[in-house]
Image 1 (tube, rainbow, N blue to C red):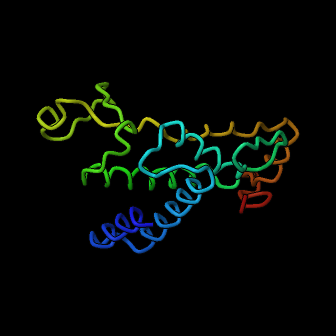
Image 2 (image 1 turned 30 degrees about the horizontal axis):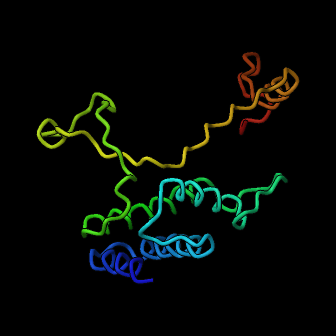
Length: 175
C-alpha cells in the first residue's frame, strides 16, 4: 500500500524507533484491511468511517453484521487508541504533503487546558490548538474494593502489635 509505505519510510528517515515503526505498520495494515473489507478508498474517508473503524477494531464484525451477543473486545482500549493515533498520524503526514485528505479530522480549540503555558505561547498559539475530532475515551478507574468488618478484623489480627509488658512485638512482624 503506497500511502502507508510512504509514511512508514518517512518515520524510518526520521529515525523513529523500529518498534514504533512496527506498531504503526500493524495499525496501518489493520486500517487498510478495514478499508478493503468495507469497500472504502483511503483518500475519500469520512469521520463516520473512522467511527466504524473503532467499532470494527472492538468487535471484528463484518460489513452489514451487527452482533447481539456480549463478547470481549478484540483489543484493549489502549491498543485501539494507539492504532487510531497511528492512522491519524499517517493522514496528518499526507495532509502536510499536499494530499487533500483528512482535513476534517481535527478541529481548532480555543479553550485553555490549564494554567501552565509554554514560553512564547501567546505568539505560537494565536489561532488555537489542533485537537482530534475522533478519539478513544479511556474508561474511568474502577472503585477500590470495600472491605467488610470481618476482613478488616482479620487484617488487624494478622498484624504485629507492640506488647508494652514484654517489650517486644507480638504476632507477625512482617505484616
